[in-house]
Amino acid sequence: MFRFRREPKLAPPPLEPKSQNADLKAIPPPPPPMARPPMHFRALAFRDIGKSIGDLLGKDYPTNGIKLETRSMTSNGVLFTVNGFRDAKSGAISGEMKTKYLDKANGVSFTESWSSNNVLSSTIELFNTLSPGLKLEFNGSFNPSNGNKGTKVTAEYRKNGLFSRCNIDLFKGPVVNSDFCINQRGLLIGAETAYNLRESKLIRYNLGVGYNTPEYSLALQAFEGFNTYTASYFHRVNEQVEAGTKATWNKSSAGPVNIEFGTRYILNRDAFVKAKIDMNGRLGLGYVQNLNNGVRVSVGGSFDTQRLGENVHKVGMNISFNQ
Image (cartoon, rainbow, N blue to C red; front, side):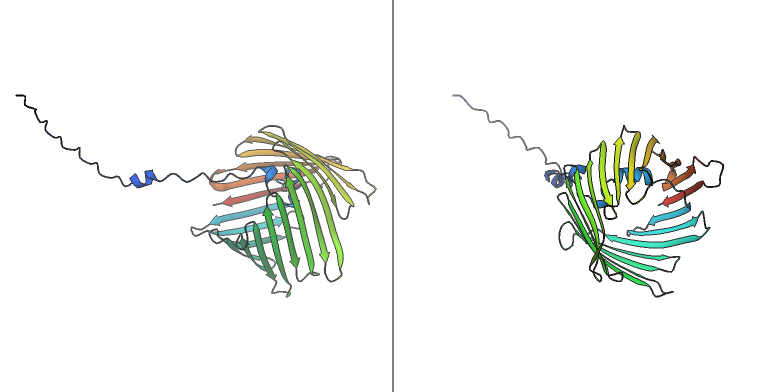
């Protein structure tokens, strides 16, 4: 007779202790945040038409005096800003203190300021609270010295390449200011108007057309009721060099077309130099350096190359501390 040998049963392997992160591993990671839409799909304001050349020719040339600014933020999100300015021509000193609290969760911000001119100002902003893309702003100012006051209400809407804005100044006119801009694959078309309700009169209207790409931008604008025309071109040559030109013609003036040319050269990630010159021989130079601990220094000068021996040149400096 054959006997079958019974194999002994093996004990199951001990269970490993469950890791605290086991449940977390089972949960799929959240999707990556949505990337910011490219420039040719982004809703841009009317003032953004020709902004690249405007920044190239207008920013980082502190020639009117000396400015000092300090910005710091507390742990609960309150931003404090204090700035002072000394005018190079008159020697007058002015300043302002400002506080801003931003509640991103509820889409609201509060801003209060007090200037050396004794002007008190408060602003309340609401972001996407009533509708996605809608921003409401309420601003009020008061001068206790002379009793002057102002109140302005602004509504702004951005969505799918469309920007529109309207604000009313209740104590001036009242005047309704409005502007819009449409951005379709980099092609910008916009307008800006100001209407006096009391006089039932259109007191300002401007038009603009532009084309933006990551490498270059073009703009053609008409201001002051088709009295002043500007044409501009901006080119990002490479990662270090930017250049551009702007032509301005005023049809009520007998003078020639004023042409400005400017360029920026990036020395490194913390410093760059800028230069510009116009048809009248006015030369502008600027240098910006980011130092350690949020310190930024800007030095600029404006020189009349046709009167180098005269006391008509201007120099200035800005120093900002961001903590």
